[in-house]
Length: 148
Image 1 (cartoon, rainbow, N blue to C red):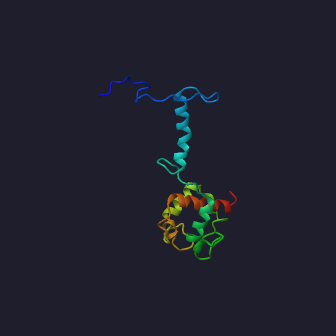
Image 2: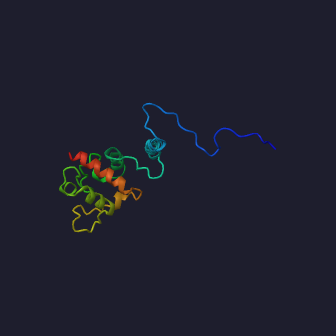
Image 3: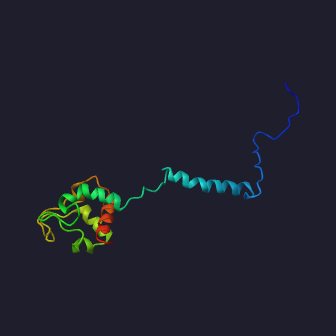
């Protein structure tokens, strides 16, 4: 058995932090500051609670060209007998962004009395993979063409 006296700090005691003249005083303040600095890094790295990546008109343009252009034209000014002009047309311009997203999501059947082309617009332009965010991106793109 070793009966030599023990010296130093107990193993469970936390070591003290060296003082720095410009650092906040107190461990709690330092730990809180480190925690607040670290939080955005975790969120930015895609951790739990991370915001969705930013989207907008650029993504909407690509989605429009893939899904909507066959009927509404590459310039969104319509294709005769298929899709209406979405740039100058009163219908698209007259809806709020949320209303236009909802309209694109549900589409319009050919027998709808408001359908003036007689051509159905399928829900989500026929692309069921489009999300609400995708539709909002498409609307954001259309608004840039409309000058809004």
